[in-house]
Image 1: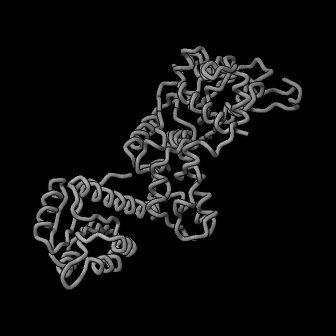
Image 2 (image 1 turned 90 degrees about the vertical axis):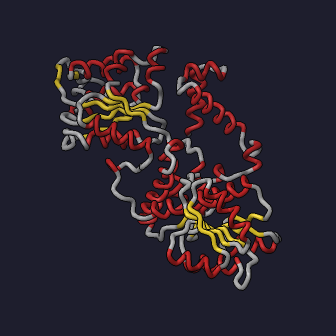
Image 3 (image 1 turned 180 degrees about the horizontal axis):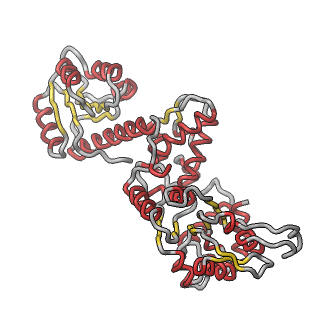
Length: 447
């Protein structure tokens, strides 16, 4: 949850002078701006002229009660939290206070730590609500079309600018779903090559025996089925940029050919001996540590250093703080418009769950979740029960009693692979199986 900055304005309402003095002293020690009054009438006067973030009010006061103040605030002011304190605690009073709009209920006497904890929780929820309100408004134009305002993303924007102004090769690293292709497109379209083609190639999805012909093209008769001469991605992208995603999945033989392209700026079509010069900038992406693959002999060291002139490492979504709320707002607007539906609102609890979720699938997973929620939800408010079950608190899930053996096995394999940064050889050794068995289990996991 987002942290309050400690500079918020707090209005304390209590008919006890001693209580007011104690609360004012303690809250000011934490840096809060504090206003104190002894009646609801005085409180309303303050609210009319002074922006207040949080109200701390007693319930039993002469003439007008704290309950009346809560109802007045909820009917006349937005984005203001309320904490109730009382020396006459009761279950009925607590229920009524929360029902009409109080965020927290604190019975007297209370310790300083209890006070600070309640105040901090209320202000954090206020900050989250305000942040989400801003995010749900039309998202301003983002740098390079990439949404993010966190310090981590600011560094990515700076790296994109520097990479776009150069002609060197770039390696874009990061977990799956972090937006590596989006960053690659930003580098291309902000560069002097923007008017030329940008061609993304997923090296992991093209069979090894076809990758060479797809990249470099082939001449008629080069192999069975080659009924005509066909240009490859490098010829098509001439003058522009080619984006080699999952570069770590290429074979040793293909790595040699890519090294030649980088060194000599030339290719040879399959079935031909004629050398062709190409002017193509190469951007590569990987969700694995290439240097680790170099050390294990899986990836060529000379190719690694040829590629890794500029390195852009995209942070996982879980490390991007408030960007989660920004992305939720953007995706909600996007998918509501596509579905021609009114944008739903997320409850505070739902936002807290979404913000604190680990997001192993990163931005791609978040986008899919929000799309599903917008399409499937028929209510105006999306609450915690509407979220995917894996995000909700569940005793069965915590004990692992609602999962099949295959699910448990797949999860363990995932943990091991993450621990060795995707090194299948090392993972297979830890799991006590061979690489072939591991590949088969990974295929089952994604099937």
